[in-house]
Amino acid sequence: MSIIIDGNKIAQDIRQAVREEASDLARRTGIVPGLAVVLAGDDPASKVYVGRKAKACAEVGFLSREYKLPADVGEAELLALIRDLNNDRRIHGILVQLPLPKHIVTDKIIAAIDPNKDVDGFHPANVGRLVTGSPLFIPCTPRGIMELIARTGIELSGKDAVVIGRSNIVGKPMAFLLLAQNATVTMCHSKTKDLPAAARRADVLIAAVGKPHMITADMVKEGAVVIDVGVNRLENGKLAGDVAFDEVAPKASAITPVPGGVGPMTIAMLMKNTLDAARMAAV
Ligand code: GUN
Image (cartoon, rainbow, N blue to C red):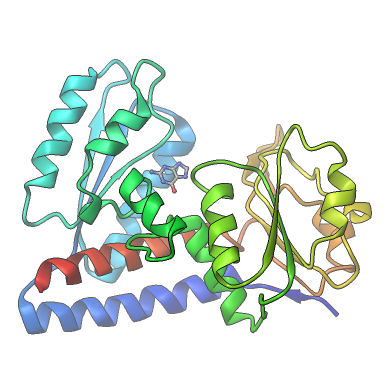
């Protein structure tokens, strides 16, 4: 019997704990955690994500501000907004929704965020801290996956972990988090020679590719833990993961569904990171 990891339930428990801790922080210090979310352009998926972030802030009792900018916003204007937010004492976390419009150099924008307010964990200082083993802010999706793994009681030490996908947002930070827990980590990507063979070695398989149902049963070892980061919109409007759930689930010892697996954890971890940022401002 494989365990279906219930990300909705775990994320709800985390939001509840964050809510209680935020209320305690406010009582002790008067500080209410504040998150600023910046959205440039009108990518439909990004709009949905930004809306969910605001809703989660309301649920846990945070201040939330949304900055909606047109798709043709200038880099200078965006940098000026970030400077203002860096200096705003009521804002503890700054999140610039990605992807940004093509004419903007994403790295330049991320580098302008105060690392102490970088609740996405994308600033080079925070990436460096993660890699060297003294993290400040950990990117929300990989942090959420580690939480799912820990709360399901899965031991990582000595296990073969395979990460498919090498994005800065998920794949790369994921690999370093697994390594920090003493897993033996293999990173796979579009140029990997024999992906099915590499995937079959995994005790823990993380699929973060963005191709619906590409991980099939023949690519999964019996008893593997399978984490599906894919959020793919099909032509029929339904959401599909990167994993062919129906055929893979019977082989897995534990697996995350889509939706209701990794997705809700990303926002729960954003709330946790914002609470941590507010706590840092309190001392
Ligand atoms: N776009 C997709 N995922 C993320 C995320 O975790 N943070 C930001 N800022 N943008 C994203």
